[in-house]
Image 1 (cartoon, each protein chain N blue to C red):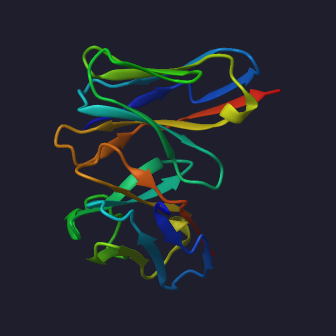
Image 2 (image 1 turned 30 degrees about the horizontal axis):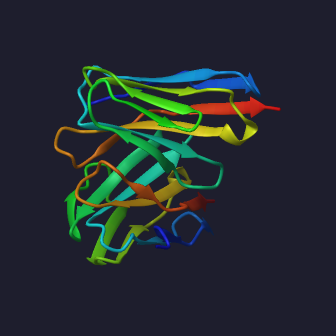
Length: 111
Length: 113
């Protein structure tokens, strides 16, 4: 069974600080997605990374896929209150028919 | 596109009652997924369809749960009879060509009293 361990579980920071969320597994994934979920809403896709070592940037968010495609990180620079939410990583299995989700990181950015 | 549409958004029912959740996937998507989200267990895959055919229902917790997809634009998840432990947020998601990039609906928040 493929598992994704996400850390930290909770993060409370001040506006302007930087942070990194990690997603780790002993399994190889075909691709990895990061989602952001706000209260009362469904997860919204932020990015998909496919190639080992790939780095993608989305404004103040930087996503990296590990060289071996077993882990990923999300780095937020100068966090804003609008970044508050639940961040979920999800790995696509080798057959391309399922996503394995991490438990999520609850981020709170205080102004 | 309107995105994935789910109804109802909220459902409150009493134990033993039948509950039906509905989903309209994004037009053109060939995969449809039903998930359940709770604080304790996170996001769990219940069942998924490919081209309207159920492929993997190993995540369905019990025989009380059933799902159908009669056509490419509609799916239902039914719980009969419902129990308090079924209380959760149920999400439908759809994708094209595989599970890699899924688009989620807003969810149905179910409370079974």
